[in-house]
Image (cartoon, rainbow, N blue to C red):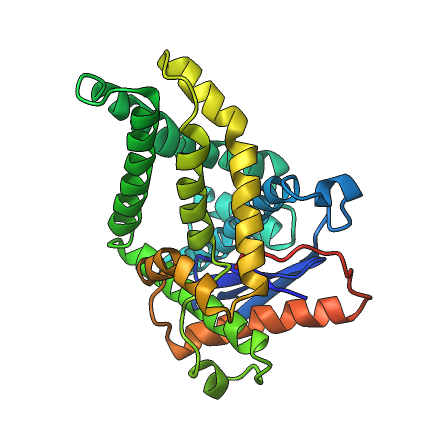
Length: 319
């Protein structure tokens, strides 16, 4: 059974086939953990077919990630208000909202809205903008295949620039530390070692099923898939790429799924070396208290999963 996770504000989200747990470090240094079942854990057989399960897994990871982020953000806001005194009516209303979300009453509309905004930004930065810029190079680059390849290279460049830029932000650097803590906890668990500080120190912050690795694979796969597309109007080009995104995600997921099951293969790690190297930008060496948070989330979801019979056909989570 494979576990995965995601770094969030002041904490880590861990997931198993049927549950997810979110642990956050509060301002009073305590760790607060929340465990919930995954609503669509038992998927219909058709959603587990190759090429289909990749898109489903990606959407599932995004939805759980946004939900975990909302909860962690509400706790961070609550801590900030308590430190500031929280005297005004507006602050009291915000506290009431934070308490409601902490009890699991996060608005589906808010989660859906954040997901749509995030998807829209991703589509613009990594589909629309590279396509437009590649179109500007049309006088110097001839042939649809060449233009599509240039567009793919621009996607990778934009992605690397984006990761490098956000990594300079103080709050994001802390999230990247929690990302490293999450990987260390998962690596320790998968090695069969005890889930304690001493064991985690023997492992690095890189993992083959990392979401960073998955995104880079998506970008590289898209270069090959989109290379045969026609080069007409910008609108047509963008629509065709959006329609083919499930195909690209499906191929990328099968690659990372295979890599996760053959993580010790030297050949596989060589092929995935660029994505593994990129994780040095999206992870930072964690502090002990951050590893403690990651271990709390992982132990919580392991305990929740142990209460029932595991689904032998469950799909591996993106780490």
